[in-house]
Length: 379
Image (cartoon, rainbow, N blue to C red; front, side, top):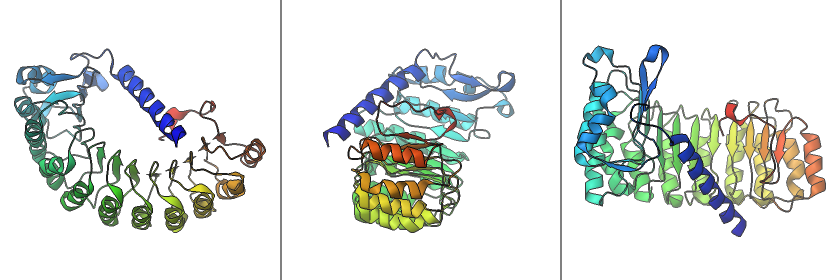
C-alpha cells in the first residue's frame, strides 16, 4: 500500500541521518577504538566520508596495526572497513593488516567496501579481502551492502569455506538471488557454530528461502535469524518456519515479506517451543486477522522471555484484538508491542487492549511516543 511505501521511505531517511550522525567527525587518529589502558581493540574506518582508497591511503588507515612491530603486542579484535572503496592494491594492504593481527582479530566488517568500482575490479578486490581471511579465526563476519549476487558470493568463497567457527554472518542488501542463496548454503562451513544469520533487502523469493531453510536445518545453535524484505511468500515462509522449529531462538525477524496466514500457521508450533525468544518481528507480512490469531496461538503460554512484538501494517482489525490479549498476557518481561498502520483497530479496541496489558507500551500510531528505554533492547 501507499502507507507502507511511505513508511519505508521515512525509515530510509532516518537511517541515513543516523548513519551520518554516528560516523560524522571521525578521523584516522580517532578510528582506533581504545580499550582499557589505551589499548587499541577496534579499528573503525567508517567516518561517514566515502572515498576510493589507494594503497598509500590504506597504509595510513591501517597504521595502528601495521605500526606495531611486535606481533605479540597486537590487540585489535574488530575491524570495520565500511564506506571505504577498496581497489586491489588497497585490498592487499588490508590483507597485510588482517594477517598482522590474526591472533586477536575476531570480528571483521567488510560491508560496503567496493562501491563505485567496475564489476571486474570489485570482484577482484573482494576476492583479495576474503582470501586473506583464510588465516583468521573469526567469530563474526559482515559482507553486507556489497553488490554481490552469485558472482560476489563465489568471490567470497574462501571466507565462507575456511571460517568454521563463525557465530555471526550478515548478508544485508547484497542482491542475494536464488542462486546466491544456494551458494551460501553450499559454501558456508560454520553451520555447527552459527548463532546469527541476517539477510535483508534481497531478491531471494521462495526458492531462495528454500535454500536458506536447508541451511538453518543444519545450524543447531541458531539464536538470531533475520530474512527481511526478501520477497519471501507463503511457501518459502512455511519452509523457514519448519526449519526454525526447535532452534534456541532469541530474535526472529521476517518482516516485509508476503507470508500470509499460511506461514503464520506453520509458525504456531515453532513459537510454542521457544523458551528464550525475546524479540519477534512479523510486521508488513500480510498476516491479516487470520494470521495474527494463529501467531497469538503460538505465543499463548509460550515464549516467557518475550520483550518486544512487532505486528505493524498487517491489516489487523478489532476481530483479532482478543487473540492478541490472550497470546501476550502473562509475559512478565514484555515491554513493547508495535501495531502501527493497522487502521481498522478502533479506538475502543485499542483502549481495551491497553487495559489487558497494563504494563506494556503499545503503539498504534507511528507518531506515538513510547516511554521505554530502547537502548537496553535489541530490536
